[in-house]
Image (cartoon, rainbow, N blue to C red; front, top):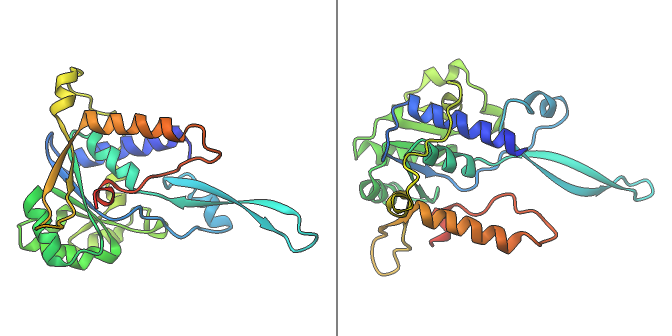
Length: 242
């Protein structure tokens, strides 16, 4: 995935979040790990290449006839970084949940962070709906994160009360909302609400500011710049706090 394609997808998410009523200071909860779809093959790969936010992964294979080394490129869809930056770019803050949470654990997190919009991987949809119903989050505010096969928007989204992430991508593009450029604003503005581990009690929402996120990104860039490999994506922030 090129940087320009990633930026375009983030701009589409920003526009979609705002189109669906996300406001400055609202919270988006991502109930997912680094969701990675199964790779398409053959003509499917070519057909989807311009439709989905894929990240190319390369590895070496042997052809079995002289053991000639070949490069094989399979495109995987990695969603978390795009959703994370799209929500922050729309002026919101981000929180996250382990998709293995029970409805009770999800309910506690929702009551602590008060999200106005949920992005949920398919496997967690049932538990999330149960928890959301107990804290008055409408199902229309739940967006299912499907695999690449279900990426394209279709009329199937109209057959259930929740929506899918592809619904966020059909409204055009909008540039990142920078707001004030003053350093003191970035120092105080909330970017993430990360759940603590809950070792000595129920997990709590720890505030992470924009300045902290930028400083961490710069530190990681410095740490990995001389490595013989490229880091495609890091763990979601709600896992790094565990």
